[in-house]
Image (cartoon, rainbow, N blue to C red; front, side, top):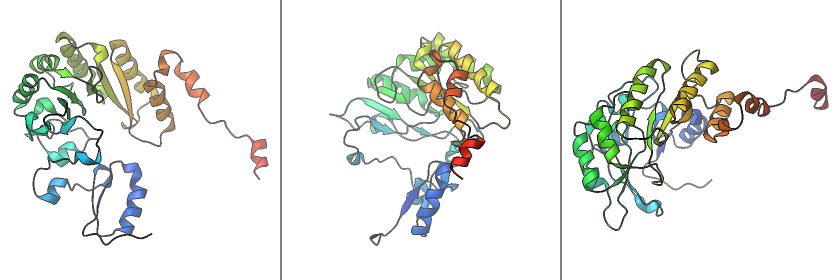
Length: 282
């Protein structure tokens, strides 16, 4: 296969389960600079260019209408499954809302990539800019439900928050650790007391990460979320876990509203190959 003589080759690996492709890439381009969460490397774009990266090339996505960017970097938490604290550290201001917006004639839609919007030193200033600018905003990476307070919830409810398609009101958050049930549900109560409806809250739930986790424990969190009226969204840590992938599909396609899990799970398991069937392939 013909390849040009590049001045420099860059590669990014987001997921750990794509490392086989990454190794093939590195064998073809041994001098490439490789980063990304799934690569095992802690190198960032900022390390390469020597400064903050807040410039985006929208020309390659001409149909993408929102303006995208970070108003802050970093996170107050240090969850063991997350690389944000390792790569970005504690919360720092990154960019202003009016600088993220591309200006007229682009719609007043801001898709934020912040991992911890309310942890930024100047979050109130950013929130006021969203309100005063009459922006619709998507907190695409979610908010920290464990750390939300009344002031943040009231500011959030005053905003025109939307899903990542800017079609409906949606707040993204997460309940990843069963041990933090109390803190998470205190956060849900703070949001709902501020006027945010439970059905407007989508909750990512990490499954398949914690050692010894059982399906009963997975279902406990799932059922608690359903009973609370919020939208559960299972995030499978091990992409090779077929049972959890089936569970994820059952939840995301809302099959759980019509088909019991045991019935769905058994109907989608691969049939066991018996001894007579094996003889056919001998």
